[in-house]
Image (tube, rainbow, N blue to C red; front, side, top):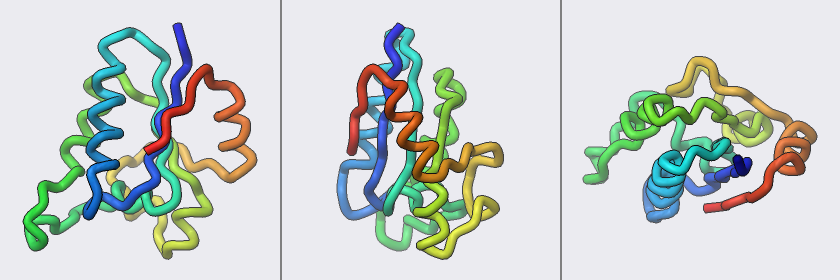
Length: 119
């Protein structure tokens, strides 16, 4: 079983990268791999609760992200420094039990993967 870390770095709207990351990890879940998902940089904005994306005529990612658990993707991480620098707290996020990682912990996580896929 390969360990694959998907890294989502882009804000939820204005680019297709966040949806592509989500589609890729959901597709990979069909192949019985050890999958993890890390949100960092502006990617942390994908995790904010109660987004009002209809005002910009976009579909919210909140429901899609919450479906990760149904696909057996339990290793969901968030870069702590990205949250802090954007004025966010873990109480602002859709996941109650998201694992916040500092930069050293992220380096360790990445070092223990067979493959990194960044969006």
